[in-house]
Length: 372
Figure (tube, rainbow, N blue to C red):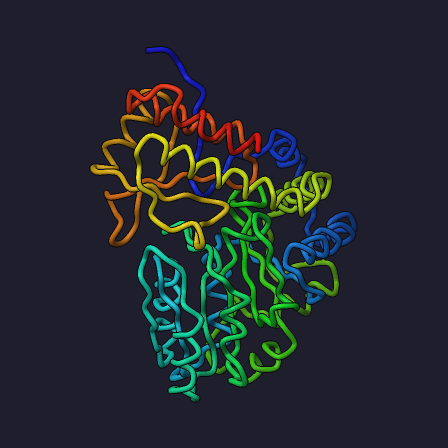
């Protein structure tokens, strides 16, 4: 068998640009020294346009889930009434985390093949005025759904509940407007649309949420946002950070800024539309409707999906992700986020049409979308 170049088409971690990888290879420096203190705050401030906020951004060394746990540990005291909007694997993770911190957890379940209905959220809050914090996922990568966070935020009406958003697989691939949408906490991570290796999470907190955190009685140390707040003013982190990931992010932000955020978002929407058109052209059914479709990952129904994924990986070197929860073994997921282009989507579609014996049909449909 010939040796192929692996094509990683999963919803994170994503391929890393060569320039970003090279920055990772820089010699190690002192994280309490002058160079780091000068560059670190500037790198974090460059994330503010992606978060859509003027609030500070804090970096935690850990995966995206570390950012989620930081949000929970700083907001959820034992018996705090919280509402978790669950329409996929990562919405369920919010609920699991809140249970771990002994919150009084309310779960509002939604179908795992569509978006969260803001009207149901509004109705639930009207029935439960005691809710203090709402947890939601922006881009539910387990189902390839992009939730309408602005509408969910507005659904609170006059309710005082804080809104906490997991933007791990959307930030940098879709608009996130923390200030304009009145969001209280937004978290993200390095290994998705930010095109850097896993190992760093980012969190931004509104002034209202910051005040609420002072009342939280949950035990926390490594994830205590107050520590990060104190140290970022000195250009540092409270604990040893993933230093080289900071430099990697610096280079990735250079690339994002050179392309321009609006162009970045347009590229992700184009890749979504190409992937969806190509899959349908070879007779495959998509998991979610157009109105809910994520710009960073596409879910495709397929019988014996895991066997298909193994076959594609072994024969062509293209790696798709599997389904999660009720979709395990029933779908495959194609990541098109961060360091990805329409040509990468054509490669993913080419293996679909070859495997199906429908040569040219998927790529032709995608090319028509690309050339519109």
